[in-house]
Length: 362
Image (spheres, rainbow, N blue to C red):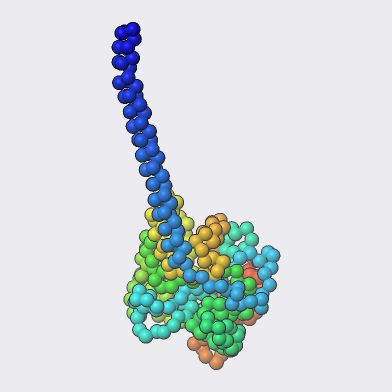
């Protein structure tokens, strides 16, 4: 009896110890669980904050609402058409500095391209519209609700400053009869920051460029340009050709292809930090139509174009000729321009005759 009692008394401490160990183990497991949960919540909160920041950067314009139903028909095999504008707005200190300062009010479309992505999205065509092109501006509704009457022989780049992006889309649709599906605009600062975020862009400069206005001084051959240099490169007009807008369009198209190739070649998924830096640089200076004004929509559109190879992308300047009344301006050359827009509308191969512009800018 006493032996059993002694045995029982000896077991008690072991049982208490076991219970303490189990209790401590449970506390440790709960601590680990709560820690992991806290990390998940924190990570989720961080991801949500990053997403919200990027999503909130994007400014949207409801093009469809502004234009209504009086638009070209959307053909079932017409692919996708994106109007890309580079704005010369001086709003903000950085934009004013990059634009060369001065008392330039408002904003104009410094660069304009209609990017056509055919069905299948394995190739694309970019049509540059010279900013000095004289066009017929249709009647437009301005941002404040007032009406801007139609006008003939106005410079294409003035439409943006007078009535905003919706009127630019309407003008492009009116002159081309091409339905524009999406609109994308980036300003000086956003362009510069994007180039810097990806570490610069290498271009093969076709000839020596010495532009006293911008300070751009490049010899012919390959150069890796930073953001400020890249902006000067695509905006130079005094350092190449006849000093008109036409001379620099070739540089803009060349740079766009080099930029797309650089972005495509970088392992963004392998570097989340770099991905975020690039996304932040782009979105904070971006204005899109309401169909692309969220990070999700923009990402989905970008993924849908992943199969497009910049190396096979065709770049064309809208065929123009010097205006007979004002040789400093150009007008669409016919029948070339009509043939070009017809091919884009029908998602057809662009004939060689539609690629030749009587006015070349030297």
